[in-house]
Length: 142
Image 1: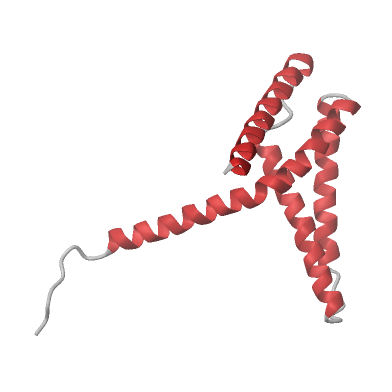
Image 2: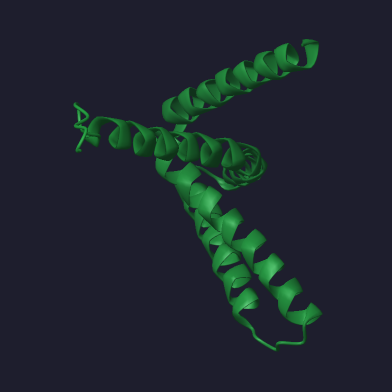
């Protein structure tokens, strides 16, 4: 129980730190670094890298000889490099590197939580639509 409470407090503190960093960057550079769009891009890039690594391990284990895993890894690295370049262009070198360096591990932590929430939403919608589309009366045919 204490571990969950500590995680909640740390998560809230990290959230507030990100908000303060965004406000600081907005005041100093006129740009907000941490946006939903950037978190989605980083999460997709890290997912592509992870999927590429798994795919490449699978192909090398079973001697399939495909470079699709390397392609996924390169797409993920290219997306992260573009995001880092965009952050550096918006601010300066130090702020851009720090912002990207914080964003990547944070997206790795947040991605499974987002996937779990999306799964629960999809499951809940499916169950709700099935329940609502069921006939309201039952007829017994003899």
